[in-house]
Every structure is written in C-alpha cells, then in structure tokens.
Length: 337
Figure 1 (cartoon, rainbow, N blue to C red):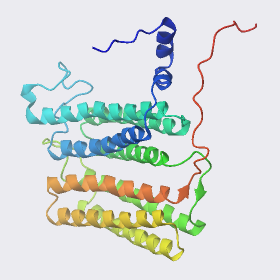
Figure 2 (spheres, rainbow, N blue to C red; figure 1 turned 90 degrees about the horizontal axis):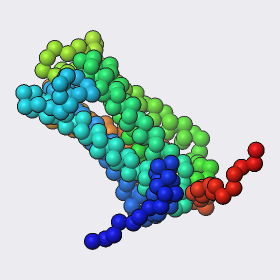
Figure 3 (cartoon, helix red, strand yellow; figure 1 turned 90 degrees about the vertical axis):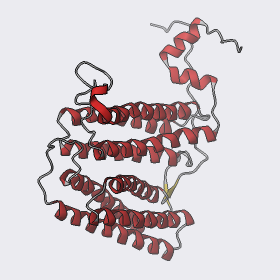
C-alpha cells in the first residue's frame, strides 16, 4: 500500500486558500495530458447538445416536471415517471460530467508549465457558461418548455462549444500578439461567413421552436410562425454559407494562402455538404427523430468548422507562450505600518 503523504499545517492552509496553485506546485502534466483534458471539454460540450436533443425528440422534456428536484418530493426520478423521467434525469446528470470535463481542463491548464494565464481564463469562462446554462435549463423546465427559452438554451450551448474550441486551439499557439496570415479582404470575407453561419444556427433554433417536436407529449406552446416558410429561410441561409465557404476556399487558393487556412475551408465545405443532405432528407421525410438528432450534431460540427476556419487565419509567436506561476507570498516579516 502506498503511504498517504502527510501535509503540514501550512500546506493545508495553502490548499484551502488556492487549491489550483497547490496542485500546480506539486504536479506538472504533459502537453498531451493537457490537450486531452481540453479536448474532453470540447467533446462533452457537443455531447450535452446531442443528448439534450434526445430529451426533446423522445418527448421527455418534462420527464422531470420541476427543477432543481425531479419532483416536489424527490431529487431523482421515480419509477412512476417511467422512461421519460429516466431520460430527462440522465441528461441532468450528464451536466455534472460536463462540469468535470471543464474542471479537468482548468486544472490541467493551470498546472501546465509554463503557466498560460489566458488559456486558464478561457477554461473559467467555460465553467461560468456551464453554470449559466444549467440555470437556464431549469428555467426551461419551469416555464413548460417555452420555445424561446429552449432556443436560448441551445445558443448558450453553442457559445460553450466556441469557448471549448478556442481553448483547444490556443494550446497550439503562443501568447504573443496575433499576426494575420491573410489580407484584410480575406479576413472580411471570413467574418461575413461567420456572421452568416451564426444566423444559420439562430434561425435553426426558430425552425425547431416552430416545428412539431415540442419536447413533451403534452400540448407545448410553439413559435407562431409558418414552419415551412421559416425552414425555407433556413435552407436559403445554408446555401449562402455554402457559397461563402466555396468563395473563401477559392480566394485563399488564389492569394496562395498558407495550407492550414485552405485545408480548414475545405473541411468546412465537406461538413456543410453532409449537413445539407441530412437537412433536406429530414425535411422531405417529415422530420423523423433520428435525422433531427443527427442534424443537431451536424449543427455543432458546422459551427466548430467555422470557428476553426476563423482561428486558422492568424498565428501567435511561441517564444512568449508562457508566464511563470506566481510564487506563494512569504509571511516572514510583518508588513510595516
């Protein structure tokens, strides 16, 4: 049996005062460990969206009819609530797994040597978005799956995915000032693509809010818009995003841009094509649940691809990649009055 190390009173006080610094002083993870920790946060950010979609598509949105408890008397689901209760409560529990993944990413980034303050801050930003989305998820239940709150819930999850991808990308950069790899015109075209993709995702939530998958077997309020009309708008925006991605790829090739931005633009086009096929098939088949779920996964992958295209158009020097972790202040002498 490995003996448990005994901590001194000063070490216990340090751990209570700043647990992250306490861990960082005693553990240095490898770069691979840090990347895996941050990647786990990306994977869980996508997984929580997909499983949240499964809750809605199985009609389990009110499987636990209240929040934060599952019922007024029980914190967990009961046998009387059936499969819907299990699915809804399971999704709630998955939030703790997401918190653990984000927390692991924060700890690994903080303990890495040299310490990169900016990377750790992105991890904390993820943590607070998770907390905010958990509260918003509770509000969604309390207001009976109001479609506007459901849309906000999805958009905040998209913000979480953005931060997770940004944190993962920052691990491969230094901390110097960003330097563009493309000209101003290409950068403007890329930002136009980002805005169009953002509108595509936002309108997609309206399609969901006006569609037939209300998230519960009972009568749930829907957004009072013509579903076919808003679906057509969504499809038009999708074609605009596809056209912009193709234009960007050709422009990057024409200006002889570095290989990474061109490769990311090509990857985005392929993801968009796959997502478009799923979107049209689900529309003509009257939105079967399995295809809607795949389309939600595709939405996450499209947005990740768009963010990666944007981030690939800059570089940061690695010679200023880290800053030393601050030493614990000594208390040898009382400060002068």
